[in-house]
Image (cartoon, rainbow, N blue to C red; front, top):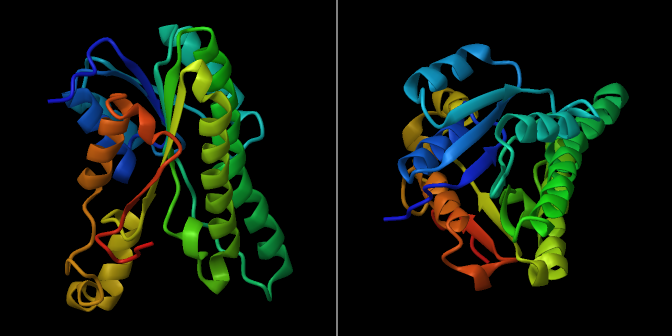
Length: 250
């Protein structure tokens, strides 16, 4: 049993989908969690009602250029020290080639939320960890980081690829100072976005193309995030862990 008692963990995108499952898993292991959320206050209130102790929620817009800076400052003001950063928040915005406005705005949004905001939080975390005996970063990438994404989501794949490269650089550059950094790269995960696709196509149709014949449950991703947050495998720092049910293998 992983024991995270006494650890404080900042999780972005914490109140829905994979993020909410990560919060549940970390909480079960004894951690105190600062959970970030954007606009969905109903989901935030529901999660807080589920965990009234050892969970604190902060609302911040990571699509704004100073959103990550504000989130980090609010987190430290609230709880004083962070041991683990889990950059889970992400957005999947179209960037169609034939629509100039959507192409430009989509690139800006994808890069800001999926790469720049996590990078800003990583920067704050590294500086914080250097002064507090080290720490752990877990960044949520995607199978798109490896293979790219579809024609209407080129920016998403590029941003997630950048996040993967960023994590590797952090692991190589700051390991000697006790900073560990890992990448999780899920494929199809049963979240609200996947449910929309499943409803449109049919679950059997989706499952027949997956080696395990099922969409990955978010609890699988959460379990791996919790393991990495434990620091039990320090020498895996810099690694990317694919969670795709063998839908994508390297």
